[in-house]
Image 1 (tube, rainbow, N blue to C red):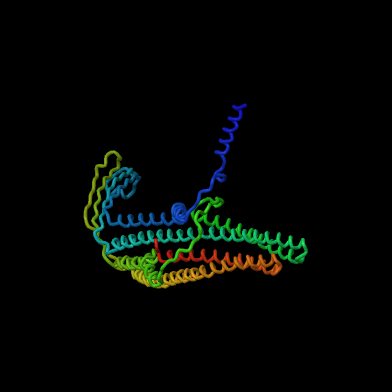
Image 2 (image 1 turned 30 degrees about the vertical axis):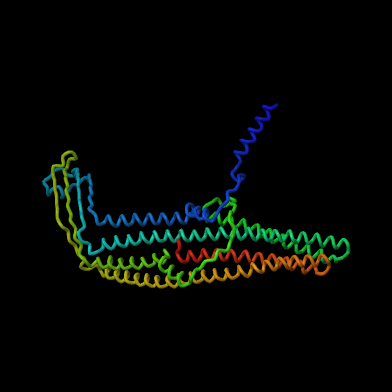
Length: 427
């Protein structure tokens, strides 16, 4: 009998170990962990990183155009007719084989190669800045999603507390109705208030689940996974100055620096277009062996020299390219100017939102304390028939509203602070 019990315990243990992870204890998640997950798993960051890698290879390709190049080719063909008669060869058609090597080194390209390399180097820097900007954007989104879960959780708790308070009040009303001290209308009004609170609780629970799914998408977790947020929202004052924030943003925002480098790229584009009017000079060499028999290759030929070329007239194509490049430079300058005002606006907007939320936190905290006291007094007065049922219900609704407003102000403050730091380009 003991042996059977031991086997049963062992079987149960194995069964528990094989259960899906959904039944395992949930891991507490902090804001720092959430951001780390987002940095590692977010697909937008991975896409931006791939773009940065591609830009580096584009730079390597541009540099390669300024290097020595060596080519080999082999030709196997049948040739006949007048071609062979020139060489007094009677076999017509005849086999023809060529092994050829050619080498080239650019000596001068009118600035085309140099500015193409500079443009590609700037493009690589822009891609790195875009990756950095994407990381900051995802960091902000992860922070926002994290605090949204906290806000929804706290609102759900406030709604749950409202259901409990109204349920207890309904019991008080029923007891007083039983002894004939209140009218039936008090019961009906209390039941309606409780039903409304229960519906709001269901909505709050649903909002929390949606917030959790949105959080999972940002940080790269399975959408249906449940996470347990470890921290709670708090108020940590920041001594930010608007002028300092704007100056910092204009000097450090990665997208701002990327737009500025776009102007440099456009300038290089003008020089690349102008190179079409300038001469090109290269060192070229070739060596070839050819014959009518593949195993002989008795005929050999080599050539070494300089090749110079210049565009005399190309139907105004080069002039059109230069004008197009100049227009793109003007476009880049306008984009830079617009970006400057956009950055300043974004910083100011986030700064003012943070200050507004900061002020609301203090006001709403006082409102919550007063609403709690008012609800307790209303309940006490009703218990001794000195107050009305409507007073209690209204006081409870006011208390829930004050709690919700306080939660929203905490959420707005923390998210606005994160938005300000993102707008400033802070790491």
